[in-house]
Amino acid sequence: MRKLLLFSVVGLVAIGLSTTAMTLDEALGLFIANDINVPYSDEGQAQINEMISAFLAALGADTGLDETNEDAVMAFEIDYSLRDVVTKLAQAYYTLGNIFIPSSENEEVHLKGKHWGLKALRMNPEFAATEQSDGFVAAVQVETDITAIYWATSNWLRVAQKHPLQALMAGVTTKTLAMSERSLELDPTYMVGGPYRSLGAYYSGLPIGRDLDKTLYYFCHVNDEAACAECDAGEMVAGALGYFENLTFMAEFYYMEKGMWAEAAALLQYVLDTPIGDTYQLYNGYSKVNAANLLEEVNEHL
Image 1 (cartoon, rainbow, N blue to C red):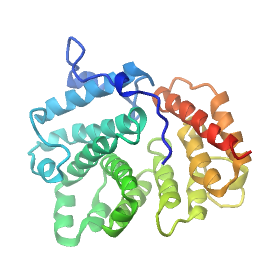
Image 2 (image 1 turned 45 degrees about the horizontal axis):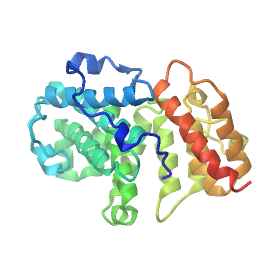
Image 3 (image 1 turned 180 degrees about the vertical axis):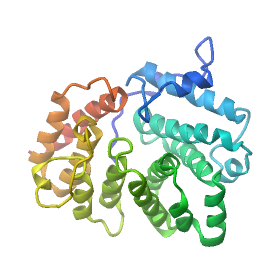
Image 4 (image 1 turned 90 degrees about the vertical axis):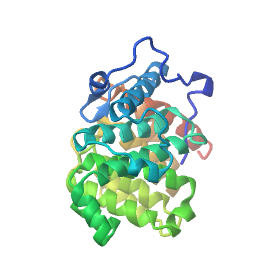
């Protein structure tokens, strides 16, 4: 996946630079409408790093646990009452890796996020028992917490993108497809159409069996482009056009993959011309910079 390089290594703000560590309540307070409400800036990156530290401290996992080792994370004992903290930790890692760290350097961050997402799923006794008896895909069907599924999937897909053929051979694509489809069943509006974005990007990025018609179908639930007129997607997610990642995904994973450069340019320019607004300051700020980078690439084909 194409990735903007906005923050240099020098700009990475180390965990713990503030004089007072962020508390768990302060970290939880940064979540508004399921999203992390920090600015797209060095300050925002520092807040997410501090948030991660607060979550790890609350879980008692801040003293030597190897978060890149799935077995170690799964064996680490956590009270079920902290499951929401585990899920938010997975979301924080995804956000840090996806937005602030260059794609050439973010695999370890997403690996940690994947493991905490899977940990949240397996903290559900029904999920764990079903996985043991009937396998992972069957367990996904009994899970009802979309946040645990969504952030485990999002991080896992980012890791799989680094090794697509290896992921295909290991059955990761089958598992993540089941997880994305379950997210869609549970709440298609989560993260302003997040399950539709996930499925659209999934079918665009498959190393074998790519299906851009399905990509268009899913993206048309969060876009009103002319290309959607005949795809019979049905009603759009409310407010989808105000969440700019819906638009940049349409440009990057459908228009650009189809060679529809003029359409991609128009949509990306719309993102650049539209105010960020107050609701999604982090992702809309990121999406504007991403749109500018994508538009440079698009303009080479016009």
